Amino acid sequence: MISTLVSYKLAASDIDKTIQRVSEQPTVSREVDYYLENIGNVKSIKDLTSDYRLFSFAMKAHGLGDMTYAKAFMEKVLTEGTGDGSFANSLSDKRYADFAETFDFKSFGTAATSFTKTQQGVVDKYLRQTLEEQAGDENQGVRLALYFQRKADNIDSFYQILADPALSQVVRTTLGLPDSIASADLDKQVEMFSKRLDLETLADPDKLDKLLERFTTMWEVNNGAATQQATGIAQLFNTSSNGISQDLMLQIAQMKR
Image 1 (tube, rainbow, N blue to C red):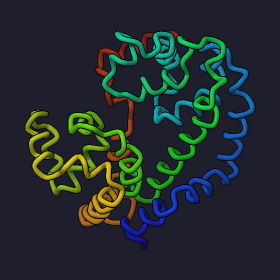
Image 2 (cartoon, rainbow, N blue to C red; image 1 turned 45 degrees about the vertical axis):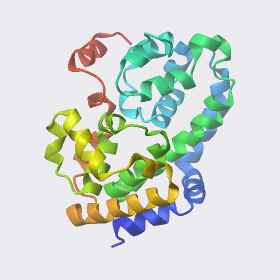
Image 3 (tube, one colour; image 1 turned 135 degrees about the horizontal axis):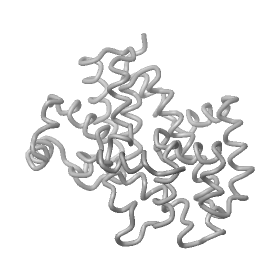
C-alpha cells in the first residue's frame, strides 16, 4: 500500500497535471460542461438556487456541498453580500463570505455571473475540491495535506487556524500535540502553536513542503495509510458544524425553501 507521504507527493508534485486528470473523468467533465454552458444565463439569486446542478456545483466548489439543501440560508448570504455588518461576515466560517464575493449579486445585479471568477474561477475551485475529496476516499491524511497546502498562502494568524478544524488538525498532528488540546482555551492553544511553529513557514513553499512531509509522516504513524477515521475526518470539513451555532441551524431548518 502506498504511504501517506508518497500519495501526497504524487498528487502535489505537479498539481496542474493532477487536476487535469480529474477534469478528464467523465462525470466531472459533464458537470463542468453543464456549469459553463448555463451559468451565464443566471441573472438572479433565485435563478442560481433553483437550478440544482448549477447551485450544487457552485456550493461544492466553495467547500459548502453539505449546505446545498439550505437554499433560504444561502439566499440570505447572497442577498446581503459582503459589506460591513452583512450576514456572511457575521459567520466565523469564511467560506460563506467567499461564496457571496464570488456571486456578488448585491453589487452587480444581473451581471454578477458574467465575470471570470464566476465562470472558469468556480470551475477551477470545483476541480481542486474534487481532487481533495477523491484523495480522501483513499487516504484522509492526503486530503488534509492538500487542503492545508491550498489554504496556507492566506493564513496569517493562529486564530485563523483554530477557526478551521481541518487546518488545526494538521497543525496538531505535525507538532505531535494530542487532539484533546482542542478543548483548551484558545489563547493557550495559540501559545502552544506559536512556540513550535513560525507562521512565516507557511509562506515559503520549501518550508511548507517540509511541514507537510512531517504531517503526512506523523499522520501515518498515528493512523496508517488506509482510510481510517473517515467519518471523523470528513466532519472537519462539514460546514454544518463549523461556524454555525445550533440556534442558527434551527433557523435554517425553519426557513422555507
